Structure formats: structure tokens, C-alpha cells
Image 1 (cartoon, rainbow, N blue to C red):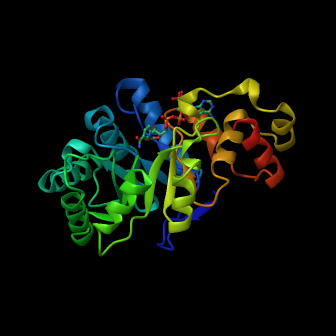
Image 2 (tube, helix red, strand yellow):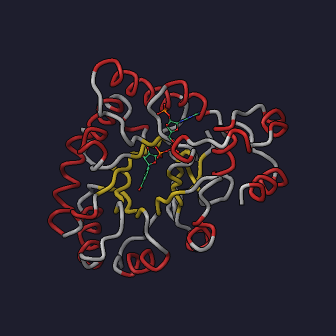
Length: 269
Ligand code: NAP
């Protein structure tokens, strides 16, 4: 699996990881299938898992914890704190609860899930810095923050560099190209592309068949290959089904040419 440098850290993470929204909501066979899917992804090199405290009110974190029990050291583990918990003491408590559910001592990346203008960003970032200082998270990231909000968050964090901003990005959802993508590239902030398959709404009919044949790719693989073409971008397609995970893990085995990348970009502009 191809990897990319995370922010300015020099550390590398897989270019295609695994999203876990809505995982862990069912029990029985479905739960076993989701755990198997995540473990298959780890075996295939997608050693980057993203979850959040709000996913299934913690059930996604619990499921991820079960899936990675024997793989903790191999996996780059990211979770998120919900905006209603951005007050200092709430963040500290949320992170503790998340690590307990995940069954780990620390996470690799702790992200602010959405901006919360009602709580001063200085207070929020003071708590995030404390989590780094006490070893509860190795890195700090954002999600759904605008350029201005990202700059304010960084200014409130004098002793750490933000490593990432998790943003919606796919061949059919391109709004970050106007400002956030070039900003993150310039500032060396990793863009973690969420909903990279447009939540499953894959535009099969619009993807050129000759390109799929040329690279022997499925439409989903071409979408993941396209979305991770720009340097700062890694992607986290949802990983609840083993067959999809296997398909997604092979999406960057070969890279489409620059000309084909540009042709696809224009087609879906
Ligand atoms: P997504 O990954 O773009 O799409 C998920 C859908 O695509 C599911 O229906 C899945 O089906 C299907 N799928 C997966 N692989 C496929 C393949 N190879 N071929 C055909 N269909 C495939 O959407 P998402 O779940 O919204 O986004 C991914 C992750 O990003 C989430 O799981 C979550 O971790 C994160 N996220 C973050 C935010 C945020 O605010 N930060 C918001 C949304 C999502 P199956 O379930 O049957 O495999």
C-alpha cells in the first residue's frame, strides 16, 4: 500500500485507510463481518482506521477496539471528539472514554469533528495540547474546518503543529478545491478525504469505460485513485464489508497517468 507523509511529521500513513461510520450498530453475524472486514483491511495494508465518539454513540469505537486488539501496534488509529464536548474538561473526559472503548492507552490522531463557534478555540486547543503532553494522543487534527478556522486553531496551538483536516472530497464533491485543498498543500496539512465514494453514490455511467479497461479498475477503485492523486490527500472509504475492503485496498496498486487524471477532473468538474 502506497503511503503519504502525515502533515509535517515525516511519519507515513497509508494513502487509503478505513472509515467506520455506522459500524458496530448491529450485533451477531453483521458485527462479525465488520470485524473481519477491518482485519482484512489491516492485512492488506490499510493500517489507518478512522472512527469518532459520535458514531453509534461509541459503538463504532468499541467495534474498532475489538478488531484491532491483536494489531494495535501496526495501526494508525484516529478518532474524533464531538463539538458539544469542546470545553476543556469535556475534551479530556471524551478522549479518556474513547481510549477506553478502543481498548488502547493512546490514539495516534485526535480530531475536532466539526467547528464549534460557541466555545473559544483557545480553550479547546489548550485541552488538545494537554492530551499531547500527557501522551493520550500523538497528533492533533481537525475536521470540517474552513481555511480561516484552521488558521485560528493553529494560532491557538503554539507548541504543536496541526497534522490534518478531514474533509468531504470525491470526484463528485469538489468544493475544497477552491481554497482548502491548495491551503493544506501549502501549509503541509494532510487532507483526509471522507465520503471518497460519495457515500456509495458511485457515478458508474459517467466514468469512462475505456479508462476502467485500460487500468483494469472498478469504478470505486478509479474514484479512490483519482481522489488520492493530489499530494496532501489520503482517503478513508467506509470499511464494513470484506469484498469492498479488498477492492478498495487494490485501488492504488497502479497510478493513473497525469493526462487521465486531468481528463477525469474536467469531466466531473
Ligand atoms: P463512502 O466511504 O464514500 O461510501 C460508503 C458507501 O460506499 C457504503 O455504502 C459502502 O457499502 C460503499 N462502498 C464501499 N466500498 C465500495 C466499493 N468498492 N464498491 C462499491 N461500494 C462501496 O462514505 P462514508 O462512509 O460517508 O465516508 C467514509 C468514512 O469517512 C466514514 O465511514 C467515516 O469514517 C468518515 N466520515 C467523516 C465525516 C466527518 O464529518 N469527518 C463525515 C462522513 C464520513 P458497504 O457499507 O456495503 O461496504
